[in-house]
Image (cartoon, rainbow, N blue to C red; front, top):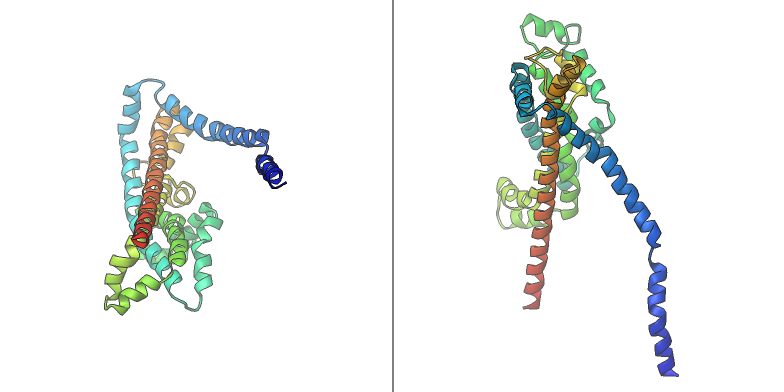
Length: 301
């Protein structure tokens, strides 16, 4: 009897395991839908950008990229990103550290405000800056008296870019810092380390991969922003046009090949962002596995 019961149990296990698995047709249907959407809405459009950009040859492609207005747009885009990303880096680290490590009144309000650019249209953000700094805005007359230009100038573009990008670094760091807690920082402070030394030696190494990831996303959004920058720029060719705005002007003027050539730069940025994201996730996973292995060996010994 015992042998027959064991045989029945052995026979029943594969059937019960198969009963818990999803039907094969469902798995392949979902995979087909997922890959179909990726192919239709991502791969095909991105491929079309490069095909159209290179349709008339490399000579015209590089001519479109080295034209004076294109060079000015690229330079302005890099300038806006080089200013807004470090500002958001400082803000993101400070905000995440304060939210994750301290309790204070208005903490939930600060978290909500950090998410505000995700909910507010970039066009509205641009209009807000026009209301504040435009010629007919709240501070416009005073700025004009002192010959300070913000709207239709580089400062307005930087302000708009900072607004739409500042959640990215903070939002990557806050959940990680909250999950890690503050035991290691408290231990470092107990051992005599100061605040800055604790930050550089304990806090920052623990969040470096999330920080890199947030900076990459922030930079990609800063260089590709259109709505808010379009409102505050004035579309002055060679002066206040970023890469996305220059692409729009070229397309509206029926310079299709040149428009796609410049657009390919933003497409390359997106691809580089994806590659860097994958590398960071891979390095982070490897570091976690290495730490787990070291801990296991320590306990085993």
